[in-house]
Length: 113
Image 1 (cartoon, rainbow, N blue to C red):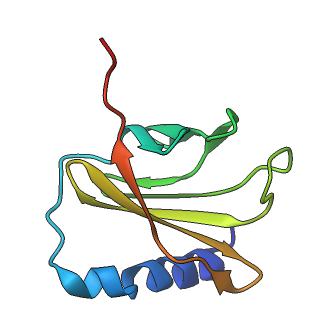
Image 2 (cartoon, rainbow, N blue to C red):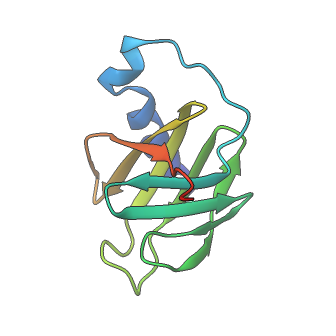
């Protein structure tokens, strides 16, 4: 991923209206399994298992993660940027050809018994 592109995507994520609604409450780490409807992904340090099942390395901090969608997946080449909002919530935006999607709200996956 190009550094300038990542910085623009990260700036777009930070400037979304949700960011203005509340001060973030930082959880411990972004690592773990995240779900939205029937989709999920898992972050473990700089590694992610994407919703399509690919294993990819990304840009990791304790409270954010970004990566480029691999060529074998829908949306190939787009940048995904995530920001941990609280213990149970991340905000995710997709950027492709200068367009940034509205933020998606992903929740930690609940274990099934």
